[in-house]
Image 1: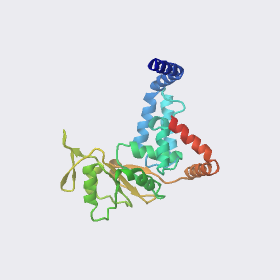
Image 2: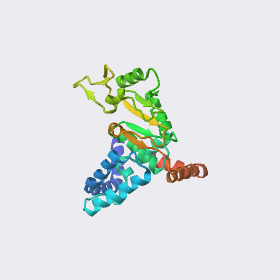
Image 3: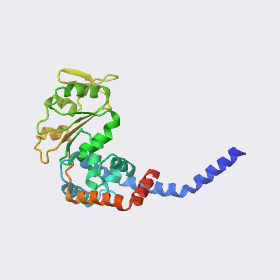
Image 4: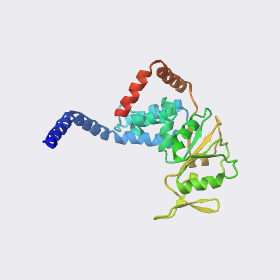
Amino acid sequence: TKRLTAAQKLISGLSTEKVRWSVDLEGLKEKRKCLLGDCMVGSAFLCYVGAFSFEFREELVRDIWEDDLRKREVPMSSPFKLEQLLTNDVEISQWTSEGLPPDELSVQNGILTTQGSRFPLCIDPQQQALNWILLREEKNNLKVCTFNDSDFLKQLELAIKYGFPFLFKDVDEYIDPVIDNVLERNVKGSGQRQFIILGDKEVDYDPNFRLYLNTKLSNPKYSPGVFGKAMVINYTVTLKGLEDQLLSVIVKYEKPELEEQRENLIQEM
């Protein structure tokens, strides 16, 4: 009897969800029609815009790429939002709790850092990216070095072998070519053993390995080769970004209940 009652309650509860599921299904069908244009802009964003300022990114995405696709009648979402395509509110909330500012520029940089096909090289004069990476990867046994450290190759070798995240901080315009194979992900081997050439050594490669490079320079002049090997990401804070960050801080201070309500809603999603 108890099982039957529980089953009836479950069926009754699920029946009330039918309307919401039907609406969600129709929404997914509409999104599927727009995937072609959305994915074209999303992939172009991940490949090309990292090194540019927020204003130039917006001009590329909104005024050039999106406008061109609409003129050619390529189906895409209206309005198109990169954040909805490449991340979600729960992930953004997690980044914020790890120290990444919640403004639109920082969210874009978070997407580029976590989803780019190349390892990130962060132009970070305000050190926001550095602080975020340190907090984000602390639980994963993050290794931190500079190119001036005498043992950086040994530390990098251990990180590659055991799948630890590795951060080069205080990078200048010269990047030691000894890590070129790592930057380019020149992983060799097949089957159970994969390895990478580091200096004159074959180092076993763990796919969980992640590499970050961070520079304090506000306007570094890197060669085209560096742009081809690494995902250069411009974390420089703009006036608009600073306004958004200050607004977020003020809301947390003046209306903490609103911020708590927002966090709870995101967790429920």
